[in-house]
Image (tube, rainbow over all chains, first blue to last red; front, side, top):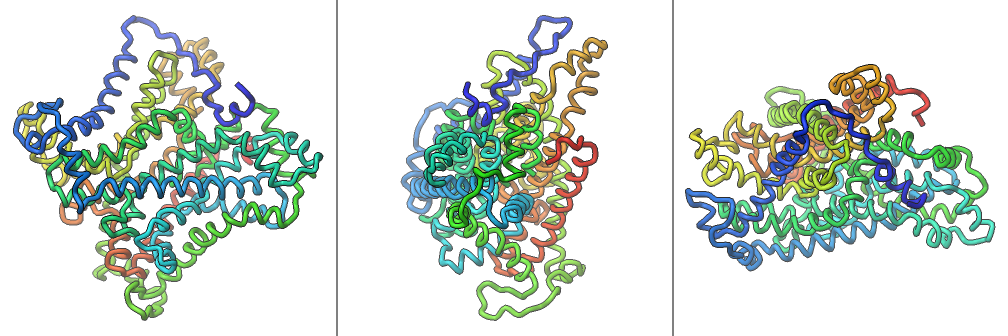
Length: 295
Length: 329
């Protein structure tokens, strides 16, 4: 593994601590215990999927079975066809918002982090301190004033409100700066001696080296935005403007206890993040092990 | 907060060669870092605009709003000085009872959930800190609920805990127990908030503990074993002290996350019974962004922010107390 990967993924390259030899029995108690617990953790998700494939009447009948008696996609077609709860539109809105915010964070935070890690300019120390200090600021203190600010921009009930303000958080800058300071300076020294412009150097040397870190940041940003609930719940209100999480919260009042339909909505909202997690779980888990998700 | 974890992780994980470079870059600004002011501005400018508008400005603006009778929908927003704060601390005022009862609900939830969110993830991490087949899969399963949004968690558990058609009550019924009104009656509502939260976030804490465990030198375990320490003694005398900074970090972020309780009580218990499980964030959101009394809502935010900052500072000082100086920046 190259030096670059080592710096982004310190935990992966180190072997787990050797199992201290246990005395006594050959029965793999640890494995059995963990397997049972894993099943318990998986159970709610499995119930969500199985319930979403039941008919409305089966969900409310007295006799309950895990597997649907007559598997049906009724719940999915109900929820996808209902004009008052446009799940497909919410899904699309969330895709657009999460993707746009991720791109914005990747560009803006990476450039700022590079300057804070690598360029000397007046006020750099103060700025770095200020940005990092805001990691401690509880998000609740920003809720009300940001609502007023976003309203003044005319962004209420539009996707801009769930894309732009969230990209201002310090997490991305903190995360990338941490990575940049771990890169050896020699890489840039050669390019500077060759007379390359700073921006070209950034694009041709730094960005390619930073791909693993940027991928992790992109994943964490996408997940956070996709799952954001409090902020979009208040700044979006037209049924066709909602993102998926606040949209889901309206299903309860629309379908009361028709859980087959409600959980079909829940399953639709979970699919992208679960797929994303399955294909990239190493990045997600290591990103969190190293810096914690924002908030 | 996050700085601490990474500091802890990188100070032990990064090879000394790279650490030296990192330090050099941070302190002495060698020639390679010199760039025109224009260049630097080009790089930080776009972020600065966002940061100033949506982080720095609102911090000040929120304090300003809290000094006014700020009805979002009315043109006049009279200055009232500290009146909103005085009201919060005056028993019997329209804002004080709802606010403190929501703070109480948040406090109860925090006290109930945090210990479990420390012990269970630590146990999982210790159990997973060894090589066996399927280790990564098990780790991924414990972590998976965390990637779901709170709205999905809310709907799902609302179903599982439903008094009439829910899965949990079905099995209670089958086993001969009475059905339990998890989402509408105390003390069950606390269970309906705490259990889903543990299921949702235990994997997150586990992952951080696991990273901390892997930074403990295997030699320490070998030495302890040579001294004849049993598994419990090794855990007590090697694992726990080695995890001290990580534990304080996890404790802090868990307390802060629990204090931010919103989605679970909004969706699962809907604040019931009465307003018993209405959280502080929910109260602030309803007061400021549904009823548009932004002045009093901002005052509530400030009080809550100060409480949370106090917790952060306390844990920072805990961390400084016995951390060797060489690990500090």
